[in-house]
Amino acid sequence: MATSASASLSKAVKQQYMELPQGDKVQAMYIWIDGTGEGLRCKTRTLDSEPKSIEDLPEWNFDGSSTYQSEGSNSDMYLIPAAMFRDPFRKDPNKLVLCQVLKYNRKPAETNLRITCNKVMEMVKDQHPWFGMEQEYTILGTDGHPFGWPSNGFPGPQGPYYCGVGADKAYGRDIVEAHYRACLYAGVQICGTNAEVMPAQWEFQVGPCEGINMGDHLWVARFILHRVCEDFGVVASFDPKPIPGNWNGAGCHTNFSTKEMREDGGLNDLTHHKLGKRHSYHIRAYDPKGGLDNARRLTGHHETSNINEFSAGVANRGASIRIPRNVGQEKKGYFEDRRPSANCDPYGVTEALIRTCLLNEEGDEPADY
Image 1: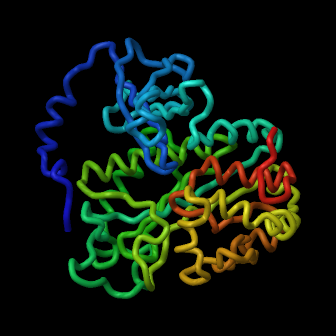
Image 2: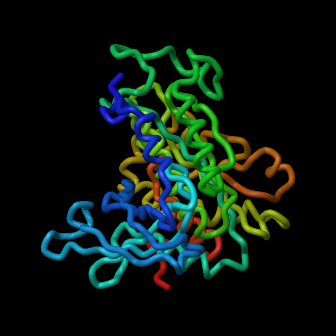
């Protein structure tokens, strides 16, 4: 399997430099979503002291013509700090800074979905919307071949790999463990992980997060995963169907509830009436290509629903919306939307759920507030 040249560099040599004192200075790594809507970029600046809040972090800029976000003749884009985390790679007092991107005229970049998501979340904050997102991904070599798979051929069929244990069943657990611990250190609200159905496919869960925090924490968890994989010389893919044929795809199942749902119920009205009437709107919001990526995954097979049909059911993993067994019995709690793709933008997904379920929007287009 092909690994990156960087992975062969001596980490022990690097470590002697990383242990040098840095004085009172702080390294802040600014992270943003690029023009693809799914790629992440980053760069670092020095601060004179440790920032205690977002307000302590300066705005910055970058060359948008090199990130698919602007033309070369007018390329400056603004980085606006939005959320701050501890840096698990450089360690305290250094920071990871998730940023929003603004264009030259201070309007949101096309792939900056955080601004409208935050506006919508503020409108319903008294309902305390909680989210939990289950991020599936596949570990690949730098040649695009799944980690641990035979170079010419396929591993044994699916069956023994989900939550599997053993060298012949779990491919790449070191990456999973490193990512989990790095997220905990950073302050990401990671709540679990497991091996998935396809070998070299894994999942981590983030949540419960309230409002805009869901998107912030999932994007930073993804960034940390990319950086961990970089150190190991492999690639984390969020492609919703990385291997065609009789292999599971990768989704980002999204669990949602409000204070009222958790305490008083009301699930049937949401799942069957509101969400069922807006299926096409949600499909467009659930992957960065307006549904084209998900069309490869949502086939009605491999634990998915059909992309063209809405369905809901208790404990049904072949439905658009799965209501957990205990929730179906108690008539209160949360539901799981199984439609979002692994490469979805969590800001877009959570915003769509709020618009349909709590703001009672109808039709195929979002309302403008």
